[in-house]
Length: 488
Image (spheres, rainbow, N blue to C red):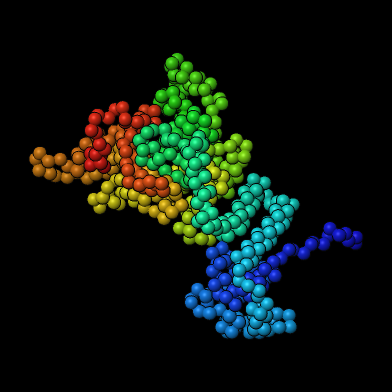
């Protein structure tokens, strides 16, 4: 058998000296632990014994106890040998040879950097193996998505955990960034209605925004209007559509712009004027920076691959994802709450790292029905979200589109008959009155606004014939105020 040099793998690089130096620094001064504890975990150490020593020292220090070769010895395997030394002797050697604790942070950075390199090497080897022996149920796109997900995890672990800057360093940079953004046309993206801007402020690149509504409440209609509005003003926009096809989304956007009922466009039952409007929209949209990306089964990795591709090839300012419940949750072995948090955490990381404003559409659950039966309001609350109110921590802005009209239509048929005194109205009659009062009305309910106060809920108009939202500013009489009691 002929043996060539390439048949032998080079030894992996290591940071054993940095591991020893850091552990020694911690043993002689426990304060050194807190310089790295925020980002360095036991798994980042290459040597298994060093993992155990670091974890044990951290446990003792976190409990306010001293961690030194003497106090740690009872908690470590006494029979363990390090070369010709016992573990106790090895701990003493680490402490004796420690130079100082000043460089503890740098030692920690060297350790996590080496961990990242080892992970990349392992991922590359896995990629080589699966590419050579690809199973029938796998395709290149799935492999790429998996590898991207793994590499992104390595990047987050290596960078976000270890990154920290002093206030005095961050402040000038933050001021410069704010000054630059104030004159940057693309850094702030306006909403298509003034009432929304007043309640939420402009969208900002790098932010994750949650838009919640009931099924059939107008999330997709709102998204198409906003995206086309932004594209007309030069913002590069995209709809990631998981629920409806690209053609369905395009027809709905065209129907909104031409103000033609969607069912007529869908059946192509158009008069001559309507055909002219559609042809005009086809011509006007040719160079519009508005992309529609359709998905079948979809994971967070699939979204990341598509989003990164669009950012690199087209540039992108704004993307709407329709919707969260259709995205396959990561980490199947974890509990549901952890998987939901991982989903929104991943979306937030994408928005920040790619500097794109991401609006994630959120399906409202049926908790409102239970509240209503107990005498509560139909109004959306944060706990109604898919994933619950805990997703709030990952969202920069969170608002709901509240249209009570379809909710009343759903409730009225199931309401029981009742007897009342002469001249009084039954609950069903009262609800019918509220239904009439709510027709064509919607409210923007601000649950969270990182830059500003939440709680504002301006009313806007919903034109059901064209499945689109419009402003009430011109229609509002002087002194008009949104009376929740009239329609809620």
